[in-house]
Length: 143
Image 1 (spheres, rainbow, N blue to C red):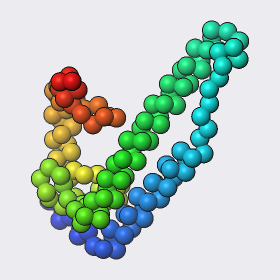
Image 2 (image 1 turned 45 degrees about the vertical axis):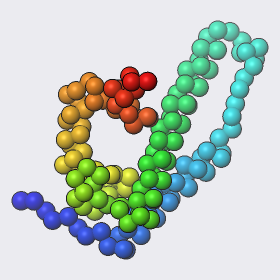
Image 3 (image 1 turned 90 degrees about the vertical axis):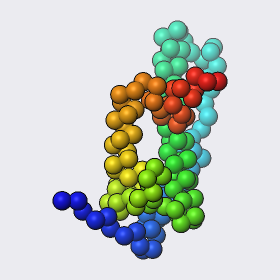
Image 4 (image 1 turned 120 degrees about the vertical axis):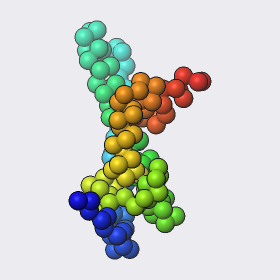
């Protein structure tokens, strides 16, 4: 039995917007609190220290890229709220279930379209998306 999606009332949109703004603030405050650090190679005592520092820097950059990507998705969701298109699936234009939006406020696909997208991506190497760039491997290869 298919459940009817709950209507996205103004109060519910306000609640989700509050969640998005809180996440946005948390990420931007984290960015302000981070110090850029660079160590002079002379400060590192040996090649093992240097290798360890390189690994830590790579991990930090990867996590930061994920945060930047998430921040972009938050901003897109906030823009959609302002444009009154929030909660509509970008693929089929159906309403996205309120519970899904509460669990993942940046969702832009209904659960059916998301499952289909993941199935296609999983089974077709050329449709795999770069998590940070949001482009398919085919689009990246066209450069």
